Image (cartoon, rainbow, N blue to C red; front, side, top):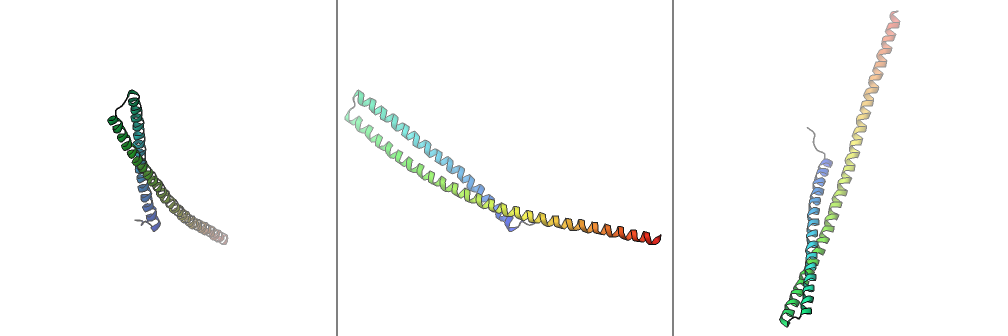
Length: 156
């Protein structure tokens, strides 16, 4: 049974951290998109309500209705401001999430590079050992052949 090296453990932990950062990044993108849609919906609703007020003013509007329209537009403006702030906050968090994912990816790449170098060194070690064994076998065969030839020559 082989034991994981500390580097293998680091790679595994970093891969898990990177994958977790990726899941979080997907969530942050979704939240940012939802905030964008909410802001656009509020802005569209405000535009439609403003057009409705414009038509009402063209047809004549009483002071109470005017105040109601104005109050509602003010509350929409407040909701739009909050939606903008929410969108900015989510964009900021998305940027942080992207940086975190990139940091984890860079760490993983560095560890993978170290693991690749370790594997190359191990393969070189194996190749050298196999070459030594092959050289030794060839040398032994040559020695046996020479011994057999010298025995054959002495027996004649």
